Image (tube, rainbow, N blue to C red; front, top):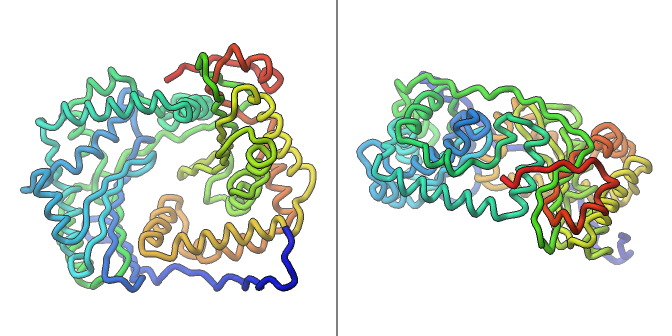
Length: 445
Protein backbone atom coordinates (compact mmCIF):
# COMPACT_ATOMS: atom_id res chain seq x y z
CA UNK A 1 0.00 0.00 0.00
CA UNK A 2 1.58 3.31 -1.11
CA UNK A 3 0.63 6.87 -0.28
CA UNK A 4 -0.11 9.65 -2.74
CA UNK A 5 2.46 12.50 -2.66
CA UNK A 6 -0.39 14.84 -1.80
CA UNK A 7 -1.79 12.66 1.00
CA UNK A 8 -1.52 14.10 4.52
CA UNK A 9 1.32 12.60 6.48
CA UNK A 10 0.47 10.79 9.69
CA UNK A 11 2.51 12.02 12.61
CA UNK A 12 4.17 9.77 15.14
CA UNK A 13 2.43 8.58 18.25
CA UNK A 14 2.66 10.81 21.27
CA UNK A 15 4.53 9.18 24.17
CA UNK A 16 2.14 6.90 26.06
CA UNK A 17 1.91 6.35 29.79
CA UNK A 18 -0.80 5.34 32.19
CA UNK A 19 -2.08 8.01 34.57
CA UNK A 20 -0.21 8.21 37.85
CA UNK A 21 -1.25 5.18 39.89
CA UNK A 22 -1.54 5.33 43.67
CA UNK A 23 -1.01 1.85 45.07
CA UNK A 24 -1.43 0.58 48.58
CA UNK A 25 -2.24 -2.58 50.49
CA UNK A 26 -4.94 -2.21 53.11
CA UNK A 27 -4.60 -3.61 56.61
CA UNK A 28 -6.99 -6.37 55.54
CA UNK A 29 -4.63 -7.44 52.76
CA UNK A 30 -6.65 -6.10 49.83
CA UNK A 31 -4.44 -4.46 47.19
CA UNK A 32 -5.71 -1.09 45.92
CA UNK A 33 -4.75 0.86 42.79
CA UNK A 34 -6.21 4.34 42.21
CA UNK A 35 -5.78 6.25 38.94
CA UNK A 36 -7.23 9.72 38.44
CA UNK A 37 -8.11 10.05 34.75
CA UNK A 38 -10.65 11.45 32.33
CA UNK A 39 -12.80 14.55 32.48
CA UNK A 40 -16.30 13.13 32.99
CA UNK A 41 -17.47 13.13 36.63
CA UNK A 42 -17.62 9.37 36.92
CA UNK A 43 -15.66 6.75 38.82
CA UNK A 44 -15.00 3.28 37.42
CA UNK A 45 -14.47 0.48 39.92
CA UNK A 46 -13.36 -3.14 39.73
CA UNK A 47 -12.94 -5.64 42.51
CA UNK A 48 -10.98 -8.59 41.15
CA UNK A 49 -11.13 -11.86 43.09
CA UNK A 50 -8.34 -14.39 42.68
CA UNK A 51 -10.16 -17.37 41.25
CA UNK A 52 -11.93 -18.32 38.03
CA UNK A 53 -12.90 -21.27 35.89
CA UNK A 54 -9.22 -22.18 35.51
CA UNK A 55 -9.07 -23.09 39.19
CA UNK A 56 -11.98 -25.54 39.08
CA UNK A 57 -11.57 -29.24 39.80
CA UNK A 58 -12.84 -31.70 37.22
CA UNK A 59 -16.12 -32.13 39.12
CA UNK A 60 -16.67 -28.33 39.36
CA UNK A 61 -16.71 -27.26 35.71
CA UNK A 62 -18.87 -24.11 35.46
CA UNK A 63 -19.38 -23.90 39.23
CA UNK A 64 -17.55 -20.57 39.17
CA UNK A 65 -20.02 -19.33 36.55
CA UNK A 66 -22.83 -20.21 38.92
CA UNK A 67 -21.04 -18.31 41.70
CA UNK A 68 -20.75 -15.29 39.41
CA UNK A 69 -24.49 -15.42 38.64
CA UNK A 70 -25.26 -15.78 42.34
CA UNK A 71 -23.24 -12.71 43.34
CA UNK A 72 -25.91 -10.39 41.90
CA UNK A 73 -28.65 -12.06 43.96
CA UNK A 74 -28.33 -9.99 47.10
CA UNK A 75 -25.72 -9.21 49.73
CA UNK A 76 -25.80 -8.17 53.36
CA UNK A 77 -29.21 -6.64 54.09
CA UNK A 78 -30.04 -6.20 50.40
CA UNK A 79 -32.02 -8.71 48.39
CA UNK A 80 -31.69 -8.98 44.60
CA UNK A 81 -33.88 -5.96 43.85
CA UNK A 82 -32.41 -3.94 46.71
CA UNK A 83 -28.87 -4.55 45.48
CA UNK A 84 -29.76 -3.48 41.95
CA UNK A 85 -31.55 -0.38 43.25
CA UNK A 86 -28.63 0.59 45.47
CA UNK A 87 -26.24 0.62 42.51
CA UNK A 88 -28.77 2.35 40.26
CA UNK A 89 -29.15 5.20 42.75
CA UNK A 90 -25.43 5.87 42.32
CA UNK A 91 -25.86 6.05 38.54
CA UNK A 92 -24.57 2.60 37.72
CA UNK A 93 -25.23 -1.11 37.73
CA UNK A 94 -23.41 -4.13 39.12
CA UNK A 95 -21.72 -6.43 36.63
CA UNK A 96 -20.05 -9.72 37.49
CA UNK A 97 -17.77 -11.42 34.98
CA UNK A 98 -15.98 -14.73 35.29
CA UNK A 99 -12.97 -15.69 33.22
CA UNK A 100 -10.38 -18.42 33.55
CA UNK A 101 -8.25 -16.68 36.16
CA UNK A 102 -10.47 -14.16 37.94
CA UNK A 103 -13.97 -13.26 39.04
CA UNK A 104 -14.61 -9.52 38.73
CA UNK A 105 -17.23 -7.23 40.28
CA UNK A 106 -17.45 -3.94 38.44
CA UNK A 107 -19.50 -0.77 38.23
CA UNK A 108 -19.24 2.86 37.20
CA UNK A 109 -20.96 5.56 39.24
CA UNK A 110 -21.17 9.31 39.54
CA UNK A 111 -18.00 10.62 41.14
CA UNK A 112 -19.55 11.63 44.45
CA UNK A 113 -20.72 8.06 45.01
CA UNK A 114 -17.32 6.40 44.58
CA UNK A 115 -16.83 5.74 48.34
CA UNK A 116 -20.36 4.31 48.58
CA UNK A 117 -19.68 2.10 45.56
CA UNK A 118 -16.54 0.76 47.23
CA UNK A 119 -18.58 -0.14 50.32
CA UNK A 120 -21.20 -1.82 48.18
CA UNK A 121 -18.65 -3.91 46.28
CA UNK A 122 -17.13 -4.92 49.60
CA UNK A 123 -20.54 -5.98 50.90
CA UNK A 124 -21.16 -8.11 47.81
CA UNK A 125 -17.74 -9.74 48.13
CA UNK A 126 -17.91 -10.29 51.89
CA UNK A 127 -21.58 -11.02 52.46
CA UNK A 128 -23.17 -12.63 49.41
CA UNK A 129 -26.56 -14.10 50.24
CA UNK A 130 -26.55 -17.10 47.89
CA UNK A 131 -30.30 -17.61 48.44
CA UNK A 132 -31.52 -21.19 48.10
CA UNK A 133 -34.68 -19.87 46.46
CA UNK A 134 -32.71 -18.80 43.38
CA UNK A 135 -30.77 -22.02 42.86
CA UNK A 136 -33.21 -23.81 40.54
CA UNK A 137 -33.56 -20.76 38.30
CA UNK A 138 -29.84 -20.11 38.11
CA UNK A 139 -29.06 -23.76 37.36
CA UNK A 140 -31.72 -23.73 34.64
CA UNK A 141 -30.17 -20.59 33.15
CA UNK A 142 -26.76 -22.23 33.24
CA UNK A 143 -28.17 -25.32 31.56
CA UNK A 144 -29.62 -23.24 28.74
CA UNK A 145 -26.29 -21.51 28.23
CA UNK A 146 -24.63 -24.92 28.05
CA UNK A 147 -27.04 -26.16 25.40
CA UNK A 148 -26.52 -22.98 23.40
CA UNK A 149 -22.74 -23.32 23.66
CA UNK A 150 -22.89 -26.95 22.50
CA UNK A 151 -24.88 -25.90 19.43
CA UNK A 152 -22.19 -23.46 18.28
CA UNK A 153 -19.42 -24.89 16.08
CA UNK A 154 -16.95 -22.26 17.28
CA UNK A 155 -17.38 -23.36 20.88
CA UNK A 156 -17.05 -27.04 19.95
CA UNK A 157 -13.87 -26.33 17.99
CA UNK A 158 -12.43 -24.31 20.88
CA UNK A 159 -13.32 -27.11 23.29
CA UNK A 160 -11.57 -29.72 21.14
CA UNK A 161 -8.53 -27.46 20.66
CA UNK A 162 -8.23 -26.66 24.35
CA UNK A 163 -8.59 -30.28 25.38
CA UNK A 164 -5.81 -31.23 22.98
CA UNK A 165 -3.49 -28.47 24.24
CA UNK A 166 -4.25 -28.57 27.98
CA UNK A 167 -5.45 -32.11 28.57
CA UNK A 168 -7.39 -32.44 31.81
CA UNK A 169 -6.24 -29.12 33.22
CA UNK A 170 -9.15 -26.75 33.89
CA UNK A 171 -8.02 -24.59 30.94
CA UNK A 172 -8.86 -27.58 28.76
CA UNK A 173 -12.37 -28.08 30.15
CA UNK A 174 -14.53 -25.46 28.43
CA UNK A 175 -17.87 -27.24 28.69
CA UNK A 176 -19.66 -28.66 31.71
CA UNK A 177 -22.05 -31.60 31.55
CA UNK A 178 -25.78 -31.30 32.29
CA UNK A 179 -25.25 -33.73 35.17
CA UNK A 180 -22.60 -31.50 36.73
CA UNK A 181 -24.86 -28.47 36.59
CA UNK A 182 -27.82 -30.38 37.99
CA UNK A 183 -25.67 -31.48 40.92
CA UNK A 184 -24.53 -28.02 42.00
CA UNK A 185 -25.85 -27.00 45.40
CA UNK A 186 -25.99 -23.78 47.34
CA UNK A 187 -23.73 -25.43 49.91
CA UNK A 188 -21.11 -26.13 47.24
CA UNK A 189 -21.38 -22.54 45.98
CA UNK A 190 -20.93 -21.09 49.44
CA UNK A 191 -18.14 -23.44 50.47
CA UNK A 192 -16.15 -22.85 47.30
CA UNK A 193 -16.61 -19.11 47.47
CA UNK A 194 -15.64 -18.83 51.14
CA UNK A 195 -12.58 -21.00 50.58
CA UNK A 196 -11.24 -18.96 47.67
CA UNK A 197 -12.54 -15.38 47.95
CA UNK A 198 -10.57 -13.37 50.45
CA UNK A 199 -8.64 -10.20 51.10
CA UNK A 200 -5.11 -11.28 50.22
CA UNK A 201 -6.13 -12.51 46.76
CA UNK A 202 -8.31 -9.50 45.91
CA UNK A 203 -7.51 -6.25 44.14
CA UNK A 204 -9.57 -3.08 44.06
CA UNK A 205 -9.09 -0.74 41.09
CA UNK A 206 -10.64 2.73 40.79
CA UNK A 207 -10.15 5.09 37.85
CA UNK A 208 -11.79 8.31 36.70
CA UNK A 209 -12.63 11.36 38.80
CA UNK A 210 -13.03 10.73 42.53
CA UNK A 211 -11.81 11.76 45.98
CA UNK A 212 -8.84 9.46 46.58
CA UNK A 213 -8.71 10.00 50.32
CA UNK A 214 -12.42 9.28 50.71
CA UNK A 215 -12.18 6.16 48.54
CA UNK A 216 -9.21 4.82 50.49
CA UNK A 217 -10.94 5.48 53.81
CA UNK A 218 -14.08 3.72 52.58
CA UNK A 219 -12.05 0.74 51.36
CA UNK A 220 -10.06 0.48 54.57
CA UNK A 221 -13.22 0.33 56.64
CA UNK A 222 -15.28 -1.81 54.27
CA UNK A 223 -12.68 -4.58 53.91
CA UNK A 224 -11.45 -4.53 57.52
CA UNK A 225 -11.53 -8.02 58.98
CA UNK A 226 -12.30 -9.82 55.73
CA UNK A 227 -11.11 -13.41 55.63
CA UNK A 228 -7.55 -14.05 54.53
CA UNK A 229 -8.50 -16.77 52.06
CA UNK A 230 -5.90 -16.40 49.36
CA UNK A 231 -7.73 -17.81 46.37
CA UNK A 232 -7.21 -21.23 44.92
CA UNK A 233 -3.89 -21.84 43.25
CA UNK A 234 -4.44 -23.31 39.82
CA UNK A 235 -2.58 -26.46 38.96
CA UNK A 236 0.31 -25.30 36.80
CA UNK A 237 -0.67 -26.10 33.20
CA UNK A 238 1.61 -28.11 30.96
CA UNK A 239 0.37 -27.10 27.49
CA UNK A 240 1.56 -29.19 24.60
CA UNK A 241 0.94 -29.34 20.90
CA UNK A 242 1.47 -31.79 18.10
CA UNK A 243 0.50 -31.91 14.45
CA UNK A 244 -2.79 -33.79 14.58
CA UNK A 245 -6.40 -33.09 13.62
CA UNK A 246 -9.09 -33.32 16.30
CA UNK A 247 -12.29 -33.70 14.33
CA UNK A 248 -15.79 -33.18 15.72
CA UNK A 249 -18.12 -34.76 13.18
CA UNK A 250 -21.10 -32.60 12.22
CA UNK A 251 -22.90 -34.46 9.45
CA UNK A 252 -24.39 -32.23 6.80
CA UNK A 253 -22.53 -29.11 7.95
CA UNK A 254 -22.22 -26.52 5.21
CA UNK A 255 -19.15 -25.03 6.89
CA UNK A 256 -16.09 -26.33 8.66
CA UNK A 257 -14.95 -24.45 11.75
CA UNK A 258 -11.17 -24.44 12.16
CA UNK A 259 -8.86 -23.70 15.07
CA UNK A 260 -5.14 -24.04 14.43
CA UNK A 261 -2.46 -23.13 16.95
CA UNK A 262 0.09 -23.96 19.60
CA UNK A 263 1.48 -22.70 22.93
CA UNK A 264 3.57 -19.52 22.88
CA UNK A 265 5.37 -17.51 25.59
CA UNK A 266 3.18 -15.55 28.08
CA UNK A 267 3.13 -11.74 28.56
CA UNK A 268 5.98 -11.90 31.07
CA UNK A 269 8.31 -13.23 28.37
CA UNK A 270 10.58 -10.94 26.36
CA UNK A 271 9.10 -12.05 23.03
CA UNK A 272 5.46 -11.38 23.89
CA UNK A 273 5.28 -7.86 22.42
CA UNK A 274 6.94 -8.98 19.20
CA UNK A 275 4.53 -11.92 19.10
CA UNK A 276 1.62 -9.49 19.32
CA UNK A 277 2.87 -7.64 16.25
CA UNK A 278 3.59 -10.87 14.39
CA UNK A 279 0.09 -12.08 15.19
CA UNK A 280 -1.45 -8.87 13.82
CA UNK A 281 0.58 -9.11 10.63
CA UNK A 282 -0.21 -12.77 10.08
CA UNK A 283 -3.87 -13.11 11.07
CA UNK A 284 -4.89 -10.75 13.83
CA UNK A 285 -6.05 -7.70 11.89
CA UNK A 286 -8.38 -6.98 8.99
CA UNK A 287 -5.42 -6.40 6.66
CA UNK A 288 -3.40 -9.36 7.90
CA UNK A 289 -1.98 -11.88 5.44
CA UNK A 290 -4.27 -14.80 6.24
CA UNK A 291 -7.35 -12.57 6.22
CA UNK A 292 -6.48 -11.00 2.89
CA UNK A 293 -5.75 -14.44 1.45
CA UNK A 294 -8.69 -16.61 2.48
CA UNK A 295 -11.30 -13.85 2.84
CA UNK A 296 -10.52 -11.17 0.26
CA UNK A 297 -8.68 -13.14 -2.42
CA UNK A 298 -10.16 -16.63 -2.15
CA UNK A 299 -13.58 -15.96 -0.61
CA UNK A 300 -13.33 -19.06 1.56
CA UNK A 301 -14.54 -17.37 4.73
CA UNK A 302 -16.07 -14.16 6.05
CA UNK A 303 -14.29 -13.51 9.34
CA UNK A 304 -11.00 -15.36 9.95
CA UNK A 305 -9.00 -14.15 12.93
CA UNK A 306 -5.92 -15.09 14.90
CA UNK A 307 -5.29 -14.15 18.50
CA UNK A 308 -3.12 -14.84 21.50
CA UNK A 309 -4.82 -16.00 24.69
CA UNK A 310 -2.74 -15.46 27.82
CA UNK A 311 -2.75 -16.91 31.32
CA UNK A 312 -0.31 -15.99 34.10
CA UNK A 313 2.12 -18.80 33.27
CA UNK A 314 1.38 -19.64 29.65
CA UNK A 315 -0.29 -18.49 26.44
CA UNK A 316 -1.31 -19.87 23.06
CA UNK A 317 -1.70 -18.57 19.53
CA UNK A 318 -4.68 -19.70 17.49
CA UNK A 319 -6.09 -18.98 14.03
CA UNK A 320 -9.87 -19.37 13.77
CA UNK A 321 -12.07 -19.48 10.68
CA UNK A 322 -15.43 -20.76 9.45
CA UNK A 323 -14.87 -21.93 5.89
CA UNK A 324 -17.15 -23.46 3.26
CA UNK A 325 -17.06 -27.25 3.55
CA UNK A 326 -15.69 -27.89 0.06
CA UNK A 327 -12.62 -25.69 0.68
CA UNK A 328 -11.67 -27.03 4.10
CA UNK A 329 -8.46 -28.60 2.85
CA UNK A 330 -7.70 -25.61 0.63
CA UNK A 331 -8.11 -23.28 3.62
CA UNK A 332 -5.65 -25.32 5.67
CA UNK A 333 -3.24 -25.15 2.73
CA UNK A 334 -3.46 -21.35 2.49
CA UNK A 335 -3.17 -20.79 6.23
CA UNK A 336 -0.07 -22.92 6.52
CA UNK A 337 1.33 -21.37 3.34
CA UNK A 338 1.14 -17.89 4.89
CA UNK A 339 2.80 -19.08 8.09
CA UNK A 340 5.61 -20.74 6.16
CA UNK A 341 6.07 -17.68 3.96
CA UNK A 342 6.53 -15.41 6.97
CA UNK A 343 9.07 -17.85 8.37
CA UNK A 344 10.96 -18.04 5.07
CA UNK A 345 11.01 -14.40 3.98
CA UNK A 346 11.08 -11.12 5.93
CA UNK A 347 7.95 -8.98 5.70
CA UNK A 348 8.12 -5.82 3.63
CA UNK A 349 9.23 -2.67 5.41
CA UNK A 350 6.01 -0.79 4.62
CA UNK A 351 3.83 -3.78 5.48
CA UNK A 352 5.44 -4.01 8.89
CA UNK A 353 5.27 -0.24 9.45
CA UNK A 354 1.52 -0.27 8.75
CA UNK A 355 0.97 -3.12 11.21
CA UNK A 356 3.18 -1.46 13.83
CA UNK A 357 1.16 1.76 13.60
CA UNK A 358 -2.05 -0.25 13.88
CA UNK A 359 -0.89 -2.21 16.94
CA UNK A 360 0.63 0.77 18.75
CA UNK A 361 -2.24 3.08 17.91
CA UNK A 362 -4.87 0.54 18.97
CA UNK A 363 -3.03 0.02 22.24
CA UNK A 364 -2.97 3.73 23.03
CA UNK A 365 -6.63 4.21 22.12
CA UNK A 366 -7.73 1.16 24.06
CA UNK A 367 -6.22 2.51 27.27
CA UNK A 368 -7.16 6.16 26.86
CA UNK A 369 -10.36 5.88 28.91
CA UNK A 370 -10.80 5.15 32.64
CA UNK A 371 -12.26 1.76 31.75
CA UNK A 372 -9.23 1.03 29.59
CA UNK A 373 -6.92 2.07 32.43
CA UNK A 374 -8.62 -0.45 34.73
CA UNK A 375 -8.30 -3.14 32.06
CA UNK A 376 -4.58 -2.49 31.72
CA UNK A 377 -3.89 -2.36 35.46
CA UNK A 378 -5.68 -5.66 35.99
CA UNK A 379 -3.72 -7.21 33.09
CA UNK A 380 -0.40 -6.00 34.50
CA UNK A 381 -1.13 -7.38 37.96
CA UNK A 382 -2.39 -10.73 36.67
CA UNK A 383 0.80 -11.26 34.69
CA UNK A 384 3.25 -9.82 37.23
CA UNK A 385 4.14 -6.75 35.16
CA UNK A 386 4.59 -3.12 36.18
CA UNK A 387 3.43 0.20 34.71
CA UNK A 388 6.79 0.53 32.98
CA UNK A 389 5.83 -2.41 30.75
CA UNK A 390 2.72 -0.52 29.64
CA UNK A 391 4.60 2.74 29.14
CA UNK A 392 7.18 1.03 26.92
CA UNK A 393 4.73 -1.10 24.94
CA UNK A 394 4.14 1.21 21.97
CA UNK A 395 7.82 2.13 21.77
CA UNK A 396 8.79 -1.56 21.73
CA UNK A 397 6.23 -2.23 19.00
CA UNK A 398 7.58 0.55 16.81
CA UNK A 399 11.19 -0.52 17.34
CA UNK A 400 10.72 -3.98 15.81
CA UNK A 401 12.39 -4.83 12.51
CA UNK A 402 11.38 -7.22 9.76
CA UNK A 403 14.15 -9.53 10.98
CA UNK A 404 12.59 -9.53 14.46
CA UNK A 405 9.22 -10.59 13.07
CA UNK A 406 10.76 -13.33 10.96
CA UNK A 407 12.66 -14.64 13.99
CA UNK A 408 9.46 -14.73 16.04
CA UNK A 409 7.69 -16.69 13.30
CA UNK A 410 10.56 -19.15 13.05
CA UNK A 411 10.97 -19.69 16.79
CA UNK A 412 7.37 -19.64 17.96
CA UNK A 413 4.98 -20.36 15.06
CA UNK A 414 6.06 -23.87 14.13
CA UNK A 415 3.57 -25.41 11.70
CA UNK A 416 4.75 -28.98 12.24
CA UNK A 417 3.73 -28.70 15.91
CA UNK A 418 0.37 -26.97 15.46
CA UNK A 419 -2.77 -28.65 16.75
CA UNK A 420 -5.75 -28.52 14.39
CA UNK A 421 -9.34 -28.74 15.62
CA UNK A 422 -12.15 -28.98 13.08
CA UNK A 423 -15.91 -29.13 13.46
CA UNK A 424 -17.38 -30.31 10.16
CA UNK A 425 -18.83 -33.08 8.06
CA UNK A 426 -16.31 -35.90 8.31
CA UNK A 427 -17.59 -37.71 5.24
CA UNK A 428 -17.21 -34.57 3.11
CA UNK A 429 -13.82 -33.36 4.35
CA UNK A 430 -11.83 -36.38 5.57
CA UNK A 431 -9.99 -36.97 2.31
CA UNK A 432 -8.96 -33.35 1.76
CA UNK A 433 -7.73 -32.77 5.34
CA UNK A 434 -5.86 -36.07 5.65
CA UNK A 435 -2.54 -34.62 4.34
CA UNK A 436 -2.43 -32.18 7.28
CA UNK A 437 -2.25 -34.69 10.14
CA UNK A 438 -3.60 -37.84 11.69
CA UNK A 439 -7.37 -37.49 12.11
CA UNK A 440 -8.46 -38.18 15.68
CA UNK A 441 -12.04 -38.28 16.87
CA UNK A 442 -12.96 -35.50 19.30
CA UNK A 443 -16.06 -35.71 21.46
CA UNK A 444 -18.70 -33.13 20.47
CA UNK A 445 -18.76 -31.75 24.03
